[in-house]
Image (tube, rainbow, N blue to C red; front, side, top):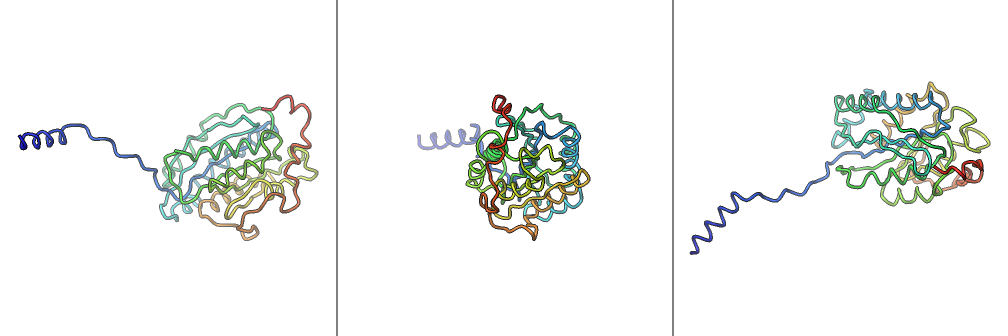
Length: 271
C-alpha cells in the first residue's frame, strides 16, 4: 500500500500541471516617463518639434551610449501627453530599450502614433500624479525612477503643483523639467518669460539630482531633449544645478501664480 501511494504521488508530480512561477519585474537602470505638454498654448509647430525631438533623441548615438553604460545596459520608457487636470494619455506604452535596434523601433512607433486632442488648461499636477501611477506594476524594477516633464506655462488647473510633487517624491521618483520658453503668450501670467525656468526649478522639479534644461528657441528643441535624456539615463547632474532636492519657493517663486492669474473662462472649462 505504501508503495502504491508513493507511486501515485510520483505520477501526480510528473503529469499534473505545475503552478506558474511568480513573475518577476525585469531589472533596468532607469524607469523613465516622458510627460509632454500638448495643451492649447502649445501650437502645432511646437508640438511637432517636441515629438520630433524625442523621436530623434531616442536613436542618437549619445543616448544609446548612455544606455549601454549602465549597470544593466537597458532602460524602460513610456511617453505621455498631457494638458488639463483630467487630460492625460499614454502614447507609447512601457518599452524596454536595450540597444540601438530597440531604440529605433520605439522611435518609429512614437513617430507613427497620433496624439489625442487635448483640452484647455495646464495641469502639471495632473501630469505628475498620472505619471507617478504608471510606475506601479509596470513589469520593470529600475535602479532609478524619473519623470521628465515639459511645459510652456505654470500649473493653472487641478491640484496645486507642490502637493502632486510631494506625492511623486514620496514614491522615490525624481522629477526633471524641460520648460519651453518660446513665446510670451504661453507663460500663463508670468510677468517675464525667463520666470518659467525659475518656476520649474522652485515648484516642479525635485528628488536627488533634479535639474531643468530650458528651451529658448525652436532650434534648441532637439539638442535640449537629447542632452536631457543623456543626463537622466547616465544619472548625471549639470554643474549649475545642485544635486539636492529644491524645495518649493526656495528661490522666491510663487508656486500658485498660475492659479492666481488664470483667465476666468478656464474656471468654467476645467479640463
